[in-house]
Length: 138
Image (cartoon, rainbow, N blue to C red; front, side, top):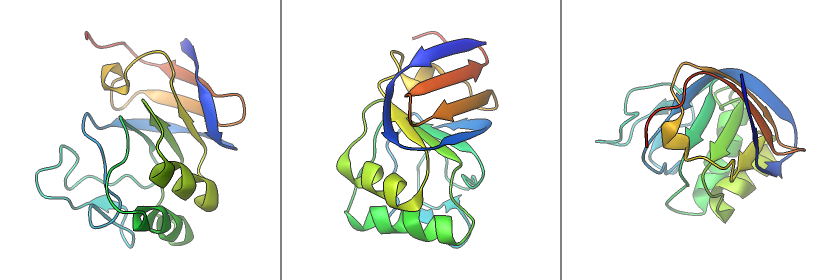
Protein backbone atom coordinates (compact mmCIF):
# COMPACT_ATOMS: atom_id res chain seq x y z
CA UNK A 1 0.00 0.00 0.00
CA UNK A 2 1.13 3.51 -0.80
CA UNK A 3 0.36 6.59 1.28
CA UNK A 4 0.04 10.00 -0.33
CA UNK A 5 -0.16 13.28 1.56
CA UNK A 6 -2.32 15.85 -0.20
CA UNK A 7 -4.55 18.75 0.67
CA UNK A 8 -7.94 18.15 2.24
CA UNK A 9 -10.71 20.00 0.38
CA UNK A 10 -13.99 18.50 1.62
CA UNK A 11 -14.18 16.82 5.01
CA UNK A 12 -15.00 13.18 5.54
CA UNK A 13 -13.64 9.80 4.57
CA UNK A 14 -14.50 7.50 1.72
CA UNK A 15 -13.13 4.27 0.38
CA UNK A 16 -13.76 1.94 -2.49
CA UNK A 17 -12.80 1.08 -6.03
CA UNK A 18 -10.92 3.77 -7.92
CA UNK A 19 -12.15 5.08 -11.27
CA UNK A 20 -9.57 7.27 -13.04
CA UNK A 21 -10.24 9.73 -15.84
CA UNK A 22 -7.29 11.24 -17.70
CA UNK A 23 -9.59 14.06 -18.83
CA UNK A 24 -11.37 16.82 -16.89
CA UNK A 25 -15.05 16.25 -16.06
CA UNK A 26 -17.99 18.60 -16.46
CA UNK A 27 -20.83 17.57 -14.19
CA UNK A 28 -23.30 19.86 -15.95
CA UNK A 29 -24.46 17.85 -18.98
CA UNK A 30 -21.44 15.55 -18.67
CA UNK A 31 -22.86 13.34 -15.91
CA UNK A 32 -26.45 12.20 -15.45
CA UNK A 33 -27.43 12.93 -11.82
CA UNK A 34 -30.24 10.37 -11.96
CA UNK A 35 -27.95 7.46 -12.87
CA UNK A 36 -24.42 8.56 -11.95
CA UNK A 37 -23.37 7.75 -15.52
CA UNK A 38 -20.87 9.78 -17.56
CA UNK A 39 -22.82 10.87 -20.65
CA UNK A 40 -20.44 13.38 -22.26
CA UNK A 41 -19.86 12.24 -25.84
CA UNK A 42 -16.24 11.32 -26.43
CA UNK A 43 -15.23 11.47 -22.76
CA UNK A 44 -12.87 8.62 -21.75
CA UNK A 45 -15.42 7.53 -19.08
CA UNK A 46 -18.48 7.82 -21.34
CA UNK A 47 -20.96 5.09 -20.38
CA UNK A 48 -19.31 4.35 -17.04
CA UNK A 49 -20.98 4.78 -13.68
CA UNK A 50 -19.18 6.93 -11.13
CA UNK A 51 -21.71 6.26 -8.36
CA UNK A 52 -20.11 4.49 -5.40
CA UNK A 53 -16.56 4.86 -6.77
CA UNK A 54 -13.60 6.93 -5.68
CA UNK A 55 -13.38 9.25 -8.69
CA UNK A 56 -9.97 10.62 -9.71
CA UNK A 57 -9.63 13.21 -12.47
CA UNK A 58 -7.26 16.13 -13.12
CA UNK A 59 -9.75 18.96 -12.50
CA UNK A 60 -13.31 20.03 -13.23
CA UNK A 61 -14.57 22.05 -16.15
CA UNK A 62 -17.77 23.76 -17.11
CA UNK A 63 -20.49 25.80 -15.49
CA UNK A 64 -20.91 26.58 -11.81
CA UNK A 65 -24.17 24.61 -12.02
CA UNK A 66 -21.90 21.54 -11.93
CA UNK A 67 -21.67 22.05 -8.14
CA UNK A 68 -25.41 21.52 -7.86
CA UNK A 69 -25.26 18.46 -10.12
CA UNK A 70 -22.84 16.89 -7.62
CA UNK A 71 -25.28 17.78 -4.84
CA UNK A 72 -28.19 16.25 -6.80
CA UNK A 73 -26.15 13.11 -7.39
CA UNK A 74 -25.57 12.83 -3.65
CA UNK A 75 -29.27 13.30 -2.87
CA UNK A 76 -30.12 10.66 -5.51
CA UNK A 77 -27.59 8.16 -4.12
CA UNK A 78 -25.50 8.36 -7.31
CA UNK A 79 -22.45 10.30 -6.15
CA UNK A 80 -18.86 9.12 -5.96
CA UNK A 81 -17.81 8.12 -2.42
CA UNK A 82 -14.76 10.41 -2.69
CA UNK A 83 -12.93 12.61 -5.19
CA UNK A 84 -9.21 13.01 -5.91
CA UNK A 85 -8.05 15.84 -8.18
CA UNK A 86 -4.64 16.95 -9.35
CA UNK A 87 -5.80 20.50 -8.64
CA UNK A 88 -9.16 21.36 -7.11
CA UNK A 89 -11.05 24.26 -8.60
CA UNK A 90 -14.07 26.08 -7.15
CA UNK A 91 -16.84 24.26 -9.06
CA UNK A 92 -15.85 20.76 -7.94
CA UNK A 93 -14.73 21.87 -4.47
CA UNK A 94 -18.03 23.62 -3.80
CA UNK A 95 -20.00 20.63 -5.11
CA UNK A 96 -18.04 18.19 -2.94
CA UNK A 97 -18.51 20.36 0.15
CA UNK A 98 -22.28 20.83 -0.22
CA UNK A 99 -22.75 17.17 -1.22
CA UNK A 100 -20.54 15.97 1.66
CA UNK A 101 -18.22 14.05 -0.68
CA UNK A 102 -14.71 13.72 0.79
CA UNK A 103 -12.20 15.37 -1.53
CA UNK A 104 -8.42 15.82 -1.72
CA UNK A 105 -5.99 17.23 -4.24
CA UNK A 106 -2.23 17.74 -4.70
CA UNK A 107 -1.27 14.21 -3.65
CA UNK A 108 2.21 14.54 -5.18
CA UNK A 109 1.54 12.36 -8.21
CA UNK A 110 -0.70 12.86 -11.22
CA UNK A 111 -3.99 10.98 -10.88
CA UNK A 112 -3.40 9.67 -14.41
CA UNK A 113 -0.68 7.43 -12.93
CA UNK A 114 -3.18 5.66 -10.68
CA UNK A 115 -4.92 2.51 -11.93
CA UNK A 116 -8.68 2.18 -12.13
CA UNK A 117 -9.89 -0.76 -10.09
CA UNK A 118 -7.40 -0.28 -7.24
CA UNK A 119 -8.70 0.04 -3.70
CA UNK A 120 -8.38 3.55 -2.24
CA UNK A 121 -9.11 5.26 1.08
CA UNK A 122 -9.49 9.06 1.05
CA UNK A 123 -9.44 11.28 4.13
CA UNK A 124 -10.63 14.80 3.33
CA UNK A 125 -9.70 16.07 6.78
CA UNK A 126 -6.01 15.10 6.73
CA UNK A 127 -5.64 15.12 2.93
CA UNK A 128 -4.30 11.57 2.98
CA UNK A 129 -4.86 8.90 0.35
CA UNK A 130 -4.07 5.22 0.89
CA UNK A 131 -3.69 3.48 -2.46
CA UNK A 132 -3.50 -0.29 -2.92
CA UNK A 133 -2.40 -0.58 -6.52
CA UNK A 134 0.44 -0.07 -8.93
CA UNK A 135 1.76 3.24 -10.20
CA UNK A 136 1.59 3.58 -13.98
CA UNK A 137 4.50 5.09 -15.94
CA UNK A 138 4.41 8.83 -16.56
